[in-house]
Length: 276
Image (cartoon, rainbow, N blue to C red; front, top):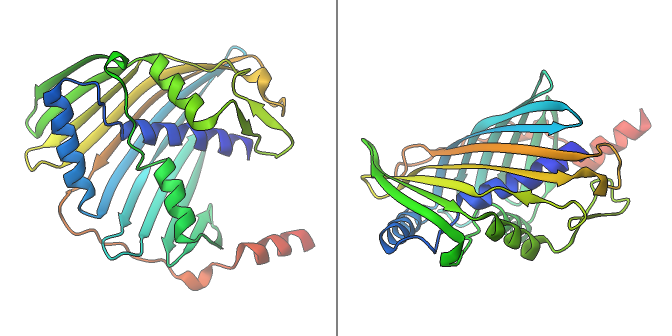
């Protein structure tokens, strides 16, 4: 659970940063991005491939993690429908996770263990607003450099955001503490001395005016002694490289539901596990 919580924290950061509006770019770059983002979001549908590579070093050891998969979403009809299938490769193991969401219920399939949980639309919207759809604004001083190049598929824009701007965003977004995954005590984010490198972001705008790809690269360090769990100690260095590719933007997205009768309520599953 601790690994899952840590992973979700930084995956959220990756997704947030990939949606950055880069308000400090040169006017041409900024306006091109804003127009493409507005046009892409107006579709109300998304079909994307996600690939993330993470390297984590601590106590002289290095761990490599990759996350890959697909995400589909359709909220053009008002009530959102989503489907996400991800694979995580970690420490020689391959972990599959599939999530389907419709009508206020999330259906989870983790390594063949299936269950469902109620997730009201307002709660879902709050989570996605905080993670995948948040538009970050940076002052001009936060943008260290930006450039645009022409490619066969369209125009590629590359931007470097200062480390200070990223750390300032984290402090504003999360405050100085975060609840530990075991709920025993809060994690002192200030005590973790979390430090980021400058962050490199790029996005590809196709000739059709839609965003076709976004990438993100950064490194950060943290003092794990601030984690009350004590599972990991010492300084940890992490390197991230993430790419989100949008498939055929502007074309209809089809989401097929799994057999929902195979998913018991989470409360029933937990009760059965306790009894056994």
